Length: 199
Image (cartoon, rainbow, N blue to C red; front, side, top):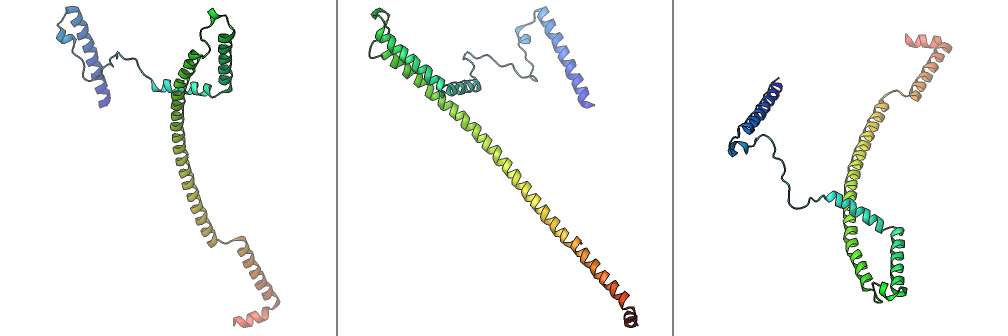
C-alpha cells in the first residue's frame, strides 16, 4: 500500500515538474532555474570526443580474421596474389610495372599484413583462452556436483543395504517355513511323544 502511494507521489511530482518546465520556458525564466537538474534521476551520459571502443566487437572481428587466416582458402588466395604480382612486374611492359625486381612494395605489403595478422591472431587466442577457462571452471563445478551426488547416492544405497540386512529376506522366510513344516510333520508323525513331552 505504501509503495503504491509512493509511486503516485512520484508521478505527481514528475507532472508538476513538467508543468513548471513548460511555464518557465513560456515565461522566459532565468538561466538559474533552467539549468536546475533533478538529483533523483541519473544524468545522461556525455558524448566523448574520442570514438567509442567496443572490445567485444573488435574481439569478434579479430576471431573472424584469425579464422580466415588459418584456412587453406587464404593460402591459395595469398599464393595467387603473389604469383600474379611477380608475373605482372616481370613480364608487363615497363610503363605498367609498379614494383621492379627486388619487389620492395610486395615485401612492404606482406610485412604490413603480417604485422596486423600476428596481433589479431594473439587476440583471438586470448579470447579463446578466456572461453576455455570459463568452460573449465563450469566443468569443474559440474564434476564437483556429480561427485557430491554420487557420494550421496552411495551413502543412501549403503543405508538401504544395512536396512535390508535387518529385514526378512525371501531365503530367510523360506528357511523358517521349511523349519515350521518339518516341525508340523514331526507332530503329525509322533503326536504321542509330543503330548508326553508337554506334560
